[in-house]
Amino acid sequence: MAQIFHRSANSLANITIAAVVLGIGGLLWASYRIDQGSYITDVGIARQQPVPFSHKHHVTDDGIDCRYCHTSVEVSPFAGLPPTATCMNCHSQIWTNAEMLEPVRASYRTGQSLQWTRVYDLPDFVYFNHSIHVYKGIGCSTCHGRVDLMPLTYKVNTLYMQWCVECHRNPAKYVRPREEVFNMTYQAPGNQMELGRRLMAEYKVQSLTDCVTCHR
Image 1 (cartoon, helix red, strand yellow):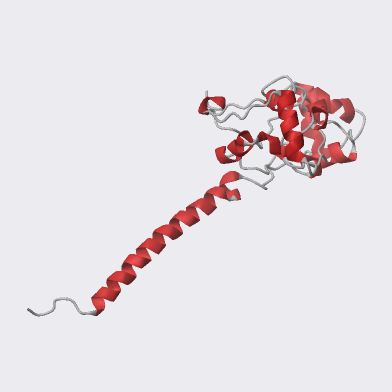
Image 2 (cartoon, helix red, strand yellow):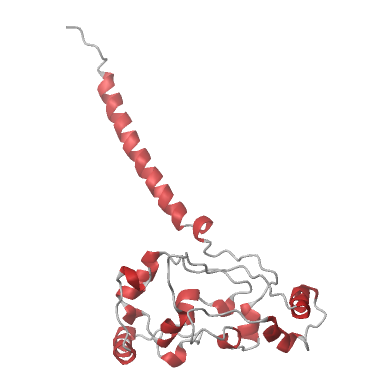
């Protein structure tokens, strides 16, 4: 019986199969990279705001504590945003004619809140409580990065579940003394694991990885 396919068809079939496998692998790799990239996560991208608020200026230059503006962070699930009156405590006396602060003055005159764009916006199916993390010794910079060095605020972590679970599985790597929670320049000591385990016992920190911890 005559040969139907040329002998080169075997090589062509092998090349085609290899190309399909490599192509699928490449697509999966590209999808993963895109999913982790700033286009999807917004990591490293400063969001447009009604006023170009600089944490660097207010925190590093002026020495304002996080809690002056985020007043509910120690007692509430939400860190809270300051009312315009808080801004005007200073800006009724300094930079009173600055054009970029006109939205602040207009908000104060009219009583209408500024519409800030959220930088960290969790999905509705995720529950997060700021106060319990503060109480358990998790510093602001652990999640938010060096906000005190940001002229414009941007996200430094994806907030993907894998990132959260990494801390929940091994809290000793991240727990710090409560008095250092709001210290943006805090550096973990060389004996962090020893310190972390001691603080976990003192603060009654648990390694919580059950789904219902965050999904309620």
